[in-house]
Length: 332
Ligand code: TYM
Image 1 (cartoon, rainbow, N blue to C red):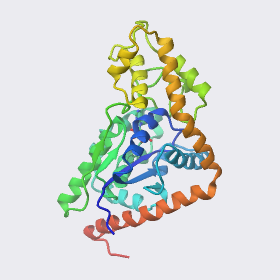
Image 2: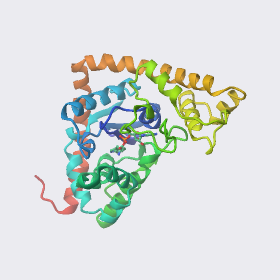
Image 3: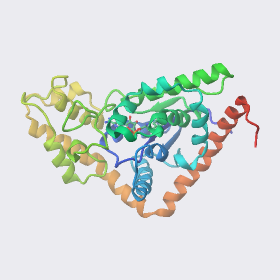
């Protein structure tokens, strides 16, 4: 029977260990949406290959990501959890969409500009066409909603533009997806340079907190987080470090930043920071314990991503065949 629920698609790259940016910007929202949507969550291993990866580490992190999806609350019975490369339609649709995407559009992507600057001369064509693969991910499932952090908005706009272009050139083929970006947690900042987004690829480990960082490491990193010398807990642009810690606490506790500011009137940074660390530890410890259990159960893990891929292949192939037919490709 056809499912009438609206469709969600999102993914995380296994290009580094996941941070609380990934958790608070994406994962926390995913589990909140799982009862109301038909959801597809993918570990985008092909995207990770746009930057050189150690094969052994890539394998381990891909599995760890699946375990983190489940441990952070995604029920594998309710959501389709899979590995991108297990659904070849993603690569095939990406090629087809590549033929409809303009070089100028890709050159304007801020993430490409940032990343290619870091890589320098050896920037790969894959990094340039990365957003087209992401558009294929999203469009193959006739996705309505894409829950992501703020940094992915531009990529989703490109997916929309490509869908509209294809629909207009041929006939309605794709649903036009909308980004879903939460009010808090959409942009967790670097703990050392709070003007920058927290990233799993930062050089300084004090800049980020990993979902799997042990409690004592979380406490140490929060206590070292850069603040300012104003000494008041306020949420404003002049205090980016403190405001970032407020955002973290706000996303975990579901309290508005203004409420948190009120709670900490007349209270110094030391107590504030130790409360942020306590909240993070309390939130992440059950996730960490569950990840450990899941990774020990290889059979269960395999059953999750295999049945996920089976369902995803079925849906994605249907859309791919539609695209191929409209483009004049002879059916196999
Ligand atoms: P990635 O792997 O960089 O990040 C995964 C998710 O985490 C969010 N995120 C953050 N949110 C708040 N604060 C931060 N500091 C922070 N850092 C990361 C990201 O916004 C994202 O939601 N291109 C995507 C992966 C992707 C994808 C897709 C996403 C591939 N195909 C299709 C959605 C739909 C990426 O690199 O995310």
